[in-house]
Image (cartoon, rainbow, N blue to C red; front, side):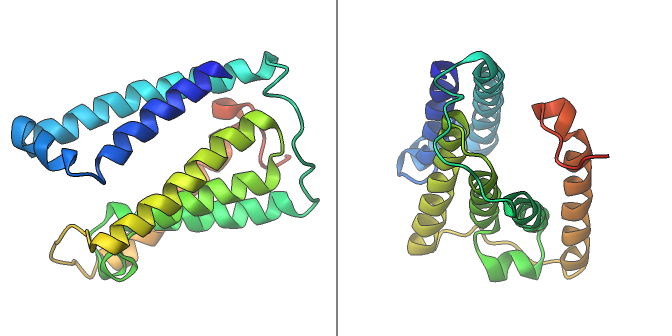
Length: 189
């Protein structure tokens, strides 16, 4: 579980920097493209570390400890919350009026995704992973709202129709790849 925690700390640290004045300092030194490129590379590396740690949890007795027993209905609630999270992810990736209206769709998506997974997973390793993302999503959304920090753009009305469809498409892909990516079947065929 240590590998997972290291990956989480590194991933979330990099993303928390975006909420501080250090972001502007890094952009001044690296340029916008350099900053985004560096964050992307570090994010991919830390995601790989988290994936390695998550895979290692299967044999870790501490990570497998049951913290709580999820209710029977949790699996269905999780599917609904994660579906909404993917719709919001689609909105966050497109420049429509919905993105302007929601202001922080990616933070909301993170909270819904992590919250849904917390509902249906009661092992310690899962609680650590999804709990960290849940807290980060809440913190990120609150800080961005308080700072009024939303990147300005000219909305494209067509994106309001494309974004939810893109989100639903991404959800369907992850739903069917989930057993191979994460070792857990969401739907029993």
